[in-house]
Structures are given as C-alpha cells and as structure tokens.
Image (cartoon, rainbow, N blue to C red; front, side):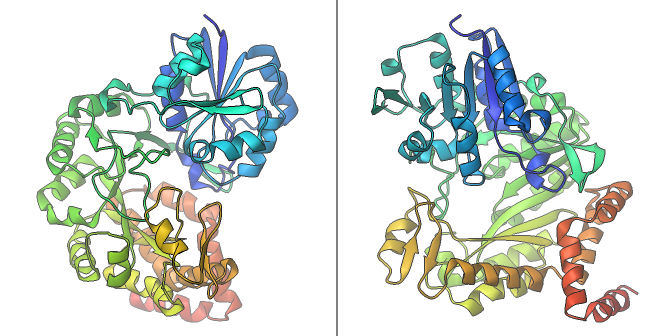
Length: 479
C-alpha cells in the first residue's frame, strides 16, 4: 500500500464540559475514515475535543512524526476557522495534508491561500474520493478534488453523488472515547450519545437552507437507506441516546412508521432525537408509534412567526398552520425544540422580538434563534445584494444599514431573556421529566452542575431585582 498509517483528525476543541457539540461524535469524518479501511495499513481517528493531551501542538506533531504518513482533516464550520488554519500551518511539511468538509468545499481557494501546506482539498462527499487518494491514483485522474500543481490550483471535475446505500455504517470501533453528557466538568456517564444517518438529501426548497445542496451547489435528491439496515445499525449501537442526523427523518411517513415498528418489534430501548417539519402533526398514527418506539425530542424548523417572512423563505406554511400543528404536537409526550431565524430582509426590531412571545403562545418547549446567514449558493443571496441597505459578508453574515452586527446581537439577547425566564426553565425541566428524556438522577446532575443558560437567567433576574417576583410566580402557579 502507498500509505501505512493515516490520521483522520477532527480539529475542533469545544469545551466538552459545557458544549452540546461535544455530545456527538464527528460522524462525517468517521464515514470517510471507514471508507479508507483496506486502503491503508492503519487508521487513527483523533477527536481533539476529547484528546486533551494532544491539544498541545508540540505533542500532536511529535505523534504525527512518529506514526503518521498522511493526514486527513475535516473543516466543516466557520467556528474556530482561524485557529484551525493556524494548527494546519504548523503540521510537518513532509507529510501529505488532505482537507475536506463543508467549509473546505465552499471556500476552496480561500483555504489554499490560508494554509499553504494543504496538498489536496476533497470537495463534497469524500467516501469514494479518499479511496483513490490513498491508492495513489494520479491527482489529475481523481474526480472531486482540488490540488496544488506548483503555484497553480487545479480544480478537477465534480464527483457524481454516490448512491446512499453504497455508503456503509461508520466503524465505531475507531473511536478512542465515549460520547456522554458533561456539564461543567460533571459527567453523566450513563447518558451516552451517538448518531445515525438514515437518509441523505431533502425534497423541500427552503430558500435560506443549502443543506439540501452539497457544498458544490449540487442538489442531492432525497435518498433513503433500507429500513432493515437502519434498524440493524441502531441495534448494534451501545449509546442509549441516538440522533437521526437526516435533514428531515420524517420525509417518507410510511418508511418512518416502518422504522418505528421494527424498533418496537425488536424491543430496542433507546432515546431517539430527530429533525422534523411541522407537517408531522398531520400524522397521529406515526406520532403514537414514535412515542412507543422511544422518540423523546424533535428539532423543528419554524423560522418565523410572520407570514410575509415565511413566504419569503419558501417554508410552505404560514403562522396559522404553525399554531394548528403545535396544538396537536403538545398533546404528545415529546419534547419540541424550535428553530427561528431573525434579521431577515425587511424585518424590523418589533417583528424580531415577537419571536419569544410567539414561541410561548404555540407552546414550543425551547428555542434556538440565529441571525439569517446567506450561504454561497443560497437563492437569497441575489435578493439581499439587490436590496438597498443590506450587505452580505464573505462569511455569509447578513446585516443592514439599520441593523448592524452589534444591534442584531443585542436584539438576540432580548429574545433569549424574553423567552428563557425562570418559569420557562421550570417548564423545561418538567417536560424533560414528563417525556422521560432524563432520569431524575440526570435532571439533578444537570441542575447542580449549573448549565450556563440556567444561571445566566437567574443572574439576570437578580440584576434586575426581580428574582423574588419570578420565584413567587413559579410557586404560586405550580402550587
């Protein structure tokens, strides 16, 4: 074989004590590493979120020099981008450096400039491409890569998207650690996490979303794995909490029901989380089977309480439909987390601040709200660029002459504390108990460890000199 020992590196170093990002393994990187099996003598998978010793750059480089003859790194997101580029530039010159991931694909030329040591960037899905790289196929003959040729950067033709059933499950034996909940250094070792990809692609066309495109702008049609293979994989996973990482696990309702039926028939006892659209409320039989199968939490894209903005984003529903669907969803013991977007084109401050009130009105349990981002292939980009007073940064951040980054950040804090009051925190903890997402022991550890949201809410109440009134409302309401 051309290479003896390949390193697959997840370079992010979020603090696993407090970051939700530390709960789940780097599954995308694991898929590519698994594809490399048989094409290299040995594979090492390092997740720097957990490899505390190897976060020391000197120790990491020593390890690489002693063991490794090719390095493969996943750069998927904007966060820590500068730090990751700095780390990559410190890696040994004589060892080939291959980089992939969403961020790397979208910003190929920028990443080559930022990290002169990169030899190859794998664009898009890398499972098939990495095999040819490791076999030593001449660069000019490998589809889906960009590479250096002297001072010139060569971009080969795109690789066709592979059939979803060709891609096997990730080899979880490559992991060097378990993924379990940690809050401020206190671990709940019996609450373990993993993820399963049961389908790729999405049939919907929300304008703000580019996840139904690969990073090259190629539309990936919805393609699902067989029900049997999905449930067999679930049955082999040791973790007791599993996230379905599909864009929308419930795209094919009949298939979702079949997966629930098979989980129930095989008596698999796990906690499941999945992303969904509000349309799931229209399928009560599926919801009943989900509860029985162990689905505990849904992440639902709501995006906005305003019909004008929902239409602009091409969501396919209006605020009345949202209210109607949540009236149904709230009848089931399933925790619902809603996603919202603020800072939309033409949106004024009062409309942004209404997000918190609307979220409480529909009864969603918790929310995440993000400023509108406009990615490279987003259909919103042309609209934003042609709207007077609006600007898109190189990172896709939208701001306007009226609402600067600082102004939007301030509005975001107002939304946060308007929704997350002490009473809402109590409701969240109660809902966790109702749906049995956490055991009593886990809820106790969660509270005692002091998650930043809980304590930031209480600190704000103290600062505003209204903690006593807030506690009175809680106890009076719950008496």
